[in-house]
Length: 92
Image (tube, rainbow, N blue to C red):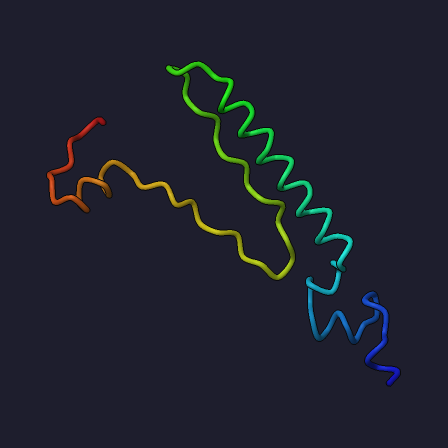
């Protein structure tokens, strides 16, 4: 019973859960709120930019312990050309 309710700062909890032990519910909720605010700001700037303006980069989520960041999903021009079976053009 005592081991189950050890604080997350204890050595046993850190040994069992690693970096994930540092974050509790409050930290995860705050990170989620920050992520949502960043996306909302990004959407506002994107919607109010000129039509010819390059869109700003999408914000990355706050790193969380124990969660690997997702790789950038943007394809290069060569990857797109290879997907469609067209020869890649140099310099584009």
